[in-house]
Length: 268
Ligand SMILES: Cc1ncc2c(c1O)COC2=O
Ligand SMILES: [Zn+2]
Ligand SMILES: [Zn+2]
Ligand SMILES: [Zn+2]
Image (cartoon, rainbow, N blue to C red; front, side, top):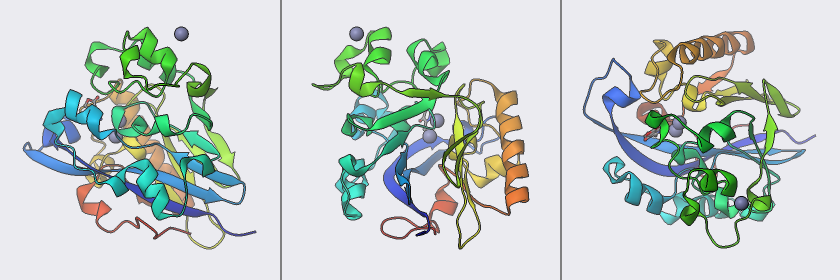
């Protein structure tokens, strides 16, 4: 059987203050960090994990994050680089519903979508300090309506073509492709473990650890719903890293991202 391939779809970058990236630690000052999505090209299908941010949304709602994104760093542009279109994706999984992970969901009306069972109701009725994170609601007409923001929906989006299959706990999406439940950053956050025939596994923390510094020092990002759960999730990921001898990739690490394989380069 052909081996699994993992592509990182470069989604451009954003800016946050260092105290948001490393909560209570810093250092402060502007930090420009990468945003990417993950395409797992598996013999059983093409699985897309997250869809980056929508440039217009960030410009309008979070202009202070100074979005930088070329056409090729949109989801359709990144897929086109691989000779693919949104309709070629079999399953779209959102690690969580922060705006920098759902911005391209609207391109997948006919794709099976999956998320954690608690993430959807949380986005529909979130804590006051989560409003910015859960600010792009165009991934779900149900959530947009619940938050009184149906104006964010594009023409043609309905309950039916924005509905999600709900999961809980660790779930195997396909043989060797495991969603690891890592709550803390959000109630329903997931990390991703991909195992291969011909190389060591990849453990993608996604937002359970923005950077290596967060991960190695058990430092939460400034955005979290439960920092104790967040620390426990990082500790669990380190156990998995050890037991699987996995290569760890972080979601928003300016230093590490420079060495990550993006574009047509893949892991596998
Ligand atoms: C990158 C990112 N992730 C989460 C949040 C924000 C971000 O910029 C702002 O408010 C949030 O909850
Ligand atoms: Zn997040
Ligand atoms: Zn309705
Ligand atoms: Zn993020």
